Image 1 (spheres, one colour):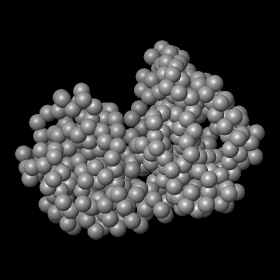
Image 2 (image 1 turned 90 degrees about the vertical axis):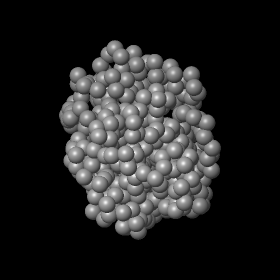
Image 3 (image 1 turned 30 degrees about the vertical axis):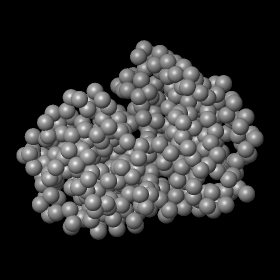
Image 4 (image 1 turned 60 degrees about the vertical axis):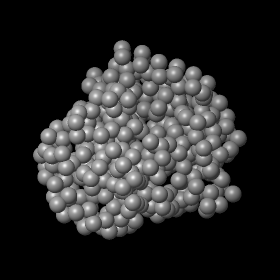
Length: 403
């Protein structure tokens, strides 16, 4: 029996955690033994789970990162214990996802992997592996990562550093570690990220672009929307939906506030994933829903929406776009990173980043056309390109070719 080991900051939670879980499920159905190593949370999984460190390790790692800008270089004991677990498992494939998140020492891990004769697959969900600090650089319009990061303009952004700027050394350390492995295949999740990687130090590795996949048995159109609207006290209004796990400025929160002035009271903006502070400070015409980990509840919310709006200012390939289309709801998004790749002219609109007026026009066009016009094309596109069984089977085929 072949053995797969995946490593990600979370399991069965958030987009990357659900992706790791679904890949593990498919691998098990194909006769593999599946392990997932993770750093945070208390998940359930069909794979055998390995916890890297504990809550105190995460907190101490976070403190070091905040003080010294050395994210990914703490958690030494936790990483050594994890390496001992890898020795016991003896995996045939090691699949990395997000190895940042205050739980793992990447230098120790890659030093070990560089001496291990096992194929490595690394799915990049963001840009952290190729920069000296940040996980995304579009908002800052920074391209230092192409040569050598320094004087980071995003020092106080995740992974936040309050004192030092170690971006030069971080870049050098990452480049040395991440190019030390002989047998590694990089998997960008969008064509946009694939192009970015060709300008980075990871260009020395083979690439295999694989789009994110979603569970179409869960994310589908739910025709009974009355109860969902009643639950959130929305009434008979056009629902303009936004979803994020963290409503930072970069997710377009300010642009949603601007967008509200373009509509009368027949329209309601609904934002999912708000913390309590934001929830209690929303202006009239915007309804807040706290974060939910229930995909079924999300599917019901997508289904009640007339339009899904993604005004993200930096993103790699957001799964929310895919989930919305699977539920028959058209998407309006900024042409940011890989966000626009998922949307066709039959399933929504892609507009220039920051162009709130064009977003309003697109939304009004969709509402005037009626949602029924978009139901079948949206579902068809989701089924053709983003069915998890098809997309994650590409990983199994990749594993087989490497083993």
